[in-house]
Picture 1 (cartoon, rainbow, N blue to C red):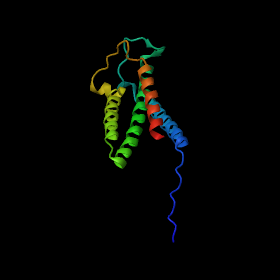
Picture 2: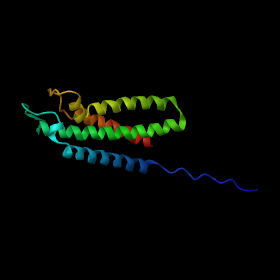
Picture 3: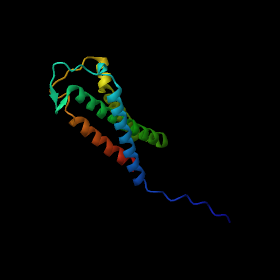
Picture 4: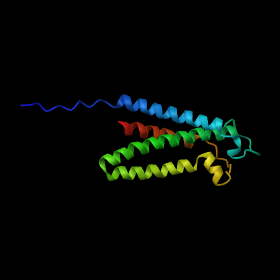
Length: 151
């Protein structure tokens, strides 16, 4: 009688997910910093007539927004990849629903990308235009979502 081969024991994913989250964060920050340095100021919205926001010039605030928005898009792309693989493996309706929500958030992120916004229409620089809190809180939520999705 031959023995059936035993499947290998499942390995804990905690270490891998922590590393993956850090890799995605580092990649998003580096890509955002690259965009902030290489995109000419002419493609960003004009900064005439405005003072400072959060002790930053308007140009620096736009560069910060560019970095944070790039990080959001990278996090969303990694989440879309995870749930697309999950949907293709399971065909679960819940995964499809998450994909639809993630695609909507991704479209929102791309349309709020400073370079894309300036190509669509002039940017209105109002009193809340450069508060980084919404971007930072969104990034925190995406990081938690990514970490939990990888466990």
